[in-house]
Figure (cartoon, rainbow, N blue to C red):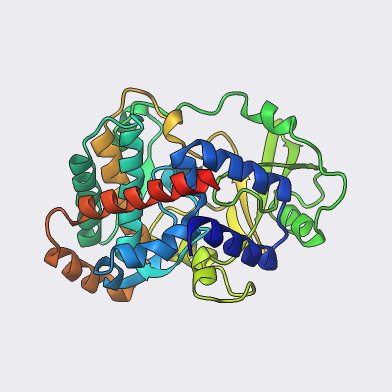
Length: 358
């Protein structure tokens, strides 16, 4: 199966899982043709298909409940129960029981692609070493949730001086097209359930976001409450792309809630699976963080160390495999992650060139 055949097969399967917005799917394909990184982020289904063949030894590593589609853009911030700013993985759409190596290789492959496009300046060897050091250190320590204090100096945990909040966040959200009809009743109930007052009046807008999930239904309830805007987003959940790969039908479960609850983190109190919807709070501080959102002055090795550490925080939710993962790590050659990242980045680029011709 080549990339075009895989894409057609996956999208047929996806339509059997959820309602697909075809115009957004067409937009996704256009963006994927234009940019290698966007292609990488939009085709985890292909990664899941190719990775076990390309990295056979790594695919036999101990299995944990993995993020699946982990990459440099998979991280964001939120406020925890105590109002503290927390940072970590914020997208578990493709979580699935996988070898722990999958997440590390995919994260490192995204680093390789960003280095090649000159969006990261770190050397791949140093980047892979930082990821592995953060990962192994956090496993040995039994986990270390990443909570950021209010003062900018404490953002040094991520190797940056400050976050750049999205400009005109509320204005842009308020300008999105209002949903007049077609809002699923269970989605409306899920949004209302997550608001601070169920009698609160709100409007629902349609939002396009993400890359892997572009084309899936996504609605935002926007309200004025006690002096300012608040928002809750509901996104339709679907099974991981790995379910497609293994021939499972569309009604197979999503692991989203399970991995979110089991990960060692200071949890987002406003993120919850309600029926077939994942609902979360939206705000300038509860948002994914793209590399372009970070200041140009940053310590990339520290940032990648933190990403490796956060991968371990997620993997530690699979308690029974903790010792087996550490044992497997110790037996691997020093350059295993760099080699696998280069091989998989090359596979992704080859597929991208084939995809653009199609």
